[in-house]
Image 1 (cartoon, helix red, strand yellow):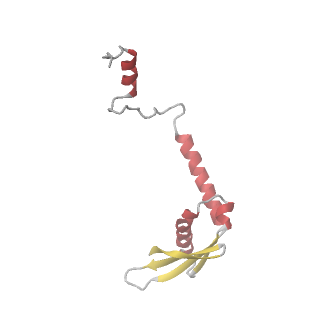
Image 2: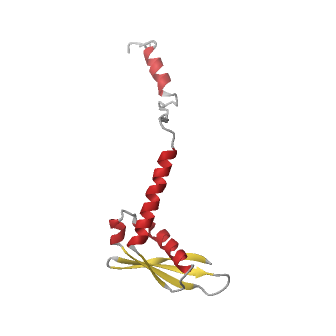
Image 3: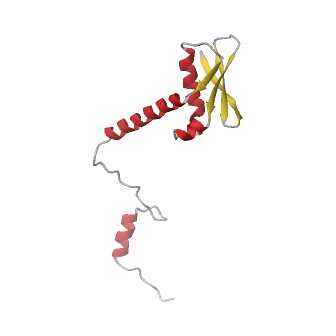
Length: 131
């Protein structure tokens, strides 16, 4: 089964995400996942993450329950935020300590590295023809 995001409807602070279930050549089945938008603010989750979070919730629910209406709850968002925080912590721990990346090499208008320009400035002054 494949889930296809079909858009959303919004009524006040509730957004209803629509998904169609595609199975071979069978007619599509419409599922909806409702979410209270204040939960995104409460858990510091971007609204643009709504469709993917609802798709995950729906896929998980459909493994056990075949109802057509679902709800993304505060617990679902809390689990997502916790997993995201743990992943960020693992990523930070995996970084090598003390490794510093060099910044970009600056170039002048002719494409020469800035260090070559600074060396040339300290070398000899340019001749001035007096005009």
